Length: 76
Image 1 (cartoon, rainbow, N blue to C red):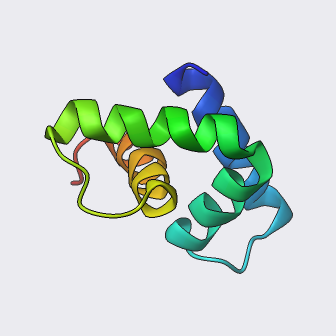
Image 2: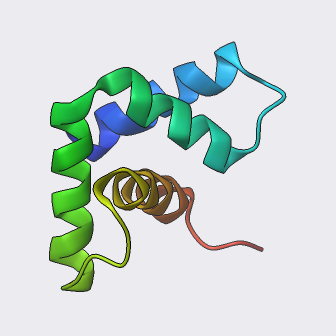
């Protein structure tokens, strides 16, 4: 899954759950996408950081949040 596809999925998930914060939406998205994507996202976290600081699921959520925040750009 590309970063752009991930952003679209995250946006759609957020539309379905407007009352949740960004991290909660990322958790829902990782659960919904399933174990293959979870492992892929965790592997990307490992590649970026050079280490896993948590189990696969939290590492996958971290990747989703990092992509979202990176594509948002700098804050004003």
